[in-house]
Amino acid sequence: MNFIQTRGVDENRPQTVTFSQAILSPIASFGGLYVPQMLPELGEEFLQKHLNSSYKELASDMLSCFEIDIDAKVIEEALSLYDKFDDASNPVPVVKVKENLYISELYHGPTRAFKDMALQPFGVVLSSIAQRLNENYLILAATSGDTGPAALETFKNRANVKVACLYPDGGTSDVQRLQMVTEDAPNLKVIGINGVFDDAQNALKRLLASQSFKEALQKKDTKLSAANSVNFGRIIFQIIYHIHSYLELVRQNAITMGEQVYLNVPSGNFGNALGGYYAWKMGVPVEKIIISSNENNVLTRLIRNGKYDLRNCEVVGTTSPAMDILKSSNVERVLFDLFGEVRTKELMQNLEENNFYELTADELAKLRECFDADYCSGEEGKKYIKETFQKYHYLMDPHTATCMKSYETCSNPEIKTIAYSTAEWTKFSPVIANALTGEVDTKDIEALESISKVANLEIPQMIKELFSKPIAQTTVIEKENIEDEILKFL
Ligand SMILES: N[C@@H](CCOP(=O)(O)O)C(=O)O
Image (cartoon, rainbow, N blue to C red; front, top):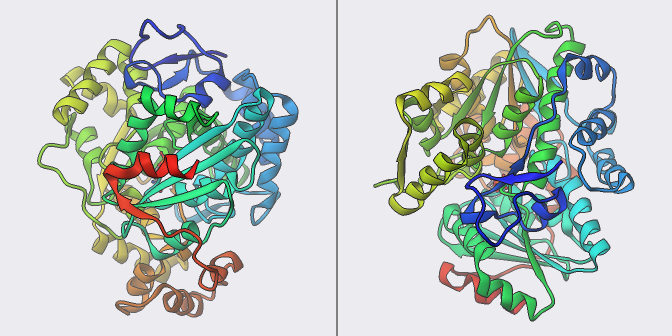
């Protein structure tokens, strides 16, 4: 399978590239992204065949439908990392919360967030390509709290790769920050910036497209790639869990094969939702994808009125910080799929130059055939956390809680919903403790203990350990100095 580009092709690039090429150098012509030339059609036969498969068998078969240029042995090693999840036989439990609402728990990996689902195997794949080519790679990661820890964890001490991870200082939860700044390996550099996530992601995209930065890296015998969902190497692994979650509902006799379901996805950079959209196009029966946001509700506005409008718009800090994002990378891949490369280039250029684009009425109607959206405030989220815990004894994190509002406002309750839980409660304990007990200004460690008692849940060892680990990464800089800081590290 070859890969094409969302904004067309400039004169310096080939029309198509392989999977390896697309993931080693993820930014395409005119600042666009790579997408598969054609999505494989799985059909009901594939779903039937995998009704009783393990997650790894399903993953391996789905990946082979993409016919990517990665050795079967490497894929096998990459997928074996799911064995480290809480339950090796089922890395993604799907739990019934109430009539017709199921939660797919994507956080049972080493950093307790859904990013492990893709970054664990991706780390093996990227490092093994680098070794095969005998090349060294700098992997950039921009994070609002979950991608960073997962990228550091997967690339730690791997051959031929170094990671520079950019996070907004003060813009993540304390556990997320500790997960990053306690990472101590010679190939990892964590850089806090005085700014917001969009500043970190803008810097990442600028550096990925910068010839002079690439030349500076070349002098250090290093090439450049990225761990974020701009990289299709992330997205390919994010399709699998949507297929798995659908099959789980069939296995649990919640639906019959072929019955349509809603996918309800807490969204920031839109990689998770895009995985669901691709799974749908590949044959998973979906009624609609519901996009759930926090107060940074740019996606809700786009899906409701067709305007991506960042004029006079500043990111606000919320109780679900991983979604404190305004420039959502993967919407571009959906635009390309629905409207083609010429229109995508025009819309994305408008966004970059004017902080604004507007879809036509026909385009909006097409987008709304696939998606609906709503957003949830922090206060509403806490109400849902408390209510869901009291009524159904199910504890969710503030990102997952945003799905509860859009479940009520956007879906037909007769149709089953799979909502995605992107992070474990342990990553956002002060907000959850506040929701459950009313306690305010509690430190993470105290909040973890109080929730553990109230909800009778164990605090996982890797979270407990964070509070006594030495701080290994102390760099916090102005955003203008990112490039210099990275070059100093190499
Ligand atoms: N929400 C993310 C932001 C980066 O998203 P990605 O999917 O593009 O890596 C985070 O928590 O870091």
